[in-house]
Length: 454
Image (cartoon, rainbow, N blue to C red):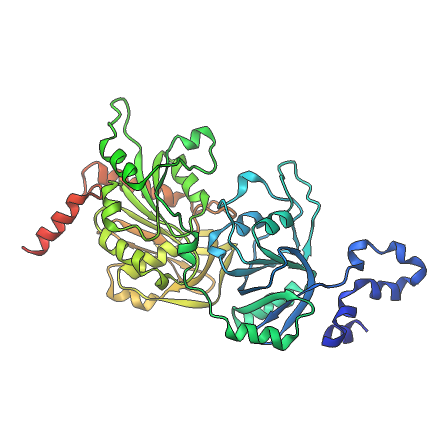
C-alpha cells in the first residue's frame, strides 16, 4: 500500500498522511497513540523542472518560490548556511536529516538579513533545546521570507541532484497542478543581479578594536563615502605602536566571519560595495584588498573584475570563493559551472607547495578552468582531491592570491585560517618597503601611466 500510494500522484494526500498508514497498523481504537505531527497532511510540494515532485510539510514562509536547487552535506551549522549570502536565490537540501533542533542564536548570523531562497529538510524540529537560542528556525525563516519544506525523502532528492545536476525548482502549495508548476518553471529566467542585491549599499568601517569589544556586526556607521576617504587621509599615526593594517573589503556578499577574522588579526577594515571604483578604493589608501565571497556567476560582475584588474600589483590582494573567481578572471582566466557544485564542511584540498591536506568548508557553483590559467600570470596553489578542480591560485609578482574555499569557515573546520595570516604577512612585507609597491594610492595611477608612456 505504501509503495503504491507514493507512486500515484492522485493519491498524494493518502501518501502524505502518515496517520492513515499508522491506523492500518494500530487500528482506529488506538489513534491516540499517533503523535499530532504525524496526523498532519502534506500542504506543500517541490516540483523540479524535469517533472519530478516531492510532497511534504511547509514551514517558514508559504509563498511560492522558484529557485535553483542545491545540496549541502554539513552535519551542523544550518544557521550559518541559512544566513550565508552566497545562497541567494537557491533552495538548499540538507543531507543531515534533523534540522532546527538547536534553534537560532543572535551571535551566529553571517549576515544581518538572510537572502537564501528555501531550506529543504527531512525532519524539522520546531522545539529547539539550546540555552543560546533566541528563536526557532521556522520563526526566522518566516520573518525573512524564506520557504521551507520537510518530511520528504532527502536521500533520494540529493542523489537526483548528484546524478543529474542542479536544476530549477518550484516550492508551492500541494494543490498546484503539476503542469501549471512546470509552465512556471519553463517561463522563469534566473536573475543575474544577486551580488548587487546582497552587497553593502554604502562604505562603512569595522575597526580592529571590535575584536576586543566583542562586537559581532562590526559595523561603525559613516555619514558618507567622502568622510571615510577624508578620515583615511588625515588620521594621525600612532607613535607608541605600529598602526593596524587597513584592509579594503570588496563586499560581493560577505560573510561576517571574514570581517571577524581580519579584526581579530589587528586589521581596520573598510567595507565597500561590489561596484566601488578603483579611484575610490585607492583614495582609501589600503594596505591590502580582500574580495569576498558572494552568490551567482562571477561573469555577472564585470565592474568588480575590472576594478581588481586595475588594482593588481598596487597592494596585496586576497580573494575568497567568488573573490577567487573574480581575481582569476581579472588575469584572463575562464570559469565554468560545476554539475552540482561543492557545498559542505568536509572537502579535502591539497596544498601543492607542502602536500598538506586541508579539510575545508565550501559553497560554490562555479570553478576556475585549469586549462585557461596557462596563458596568465597565475599558478595553481591548491587542488580539490575529490575532482581535481582548482582550489587556489597566486601571482607571486603581484602578491595576489585566492582560494575557492572558505578559510573563515562558519560553519566548518579551521584548517585554512592560516591564509589570513599569510595575507597579513604580505601587507607587512609591503609596509616594510622590501617590495616595489606599498599602499594603493592615487599616486600609483600616475606611476603606472608614466611607466606605460616610457
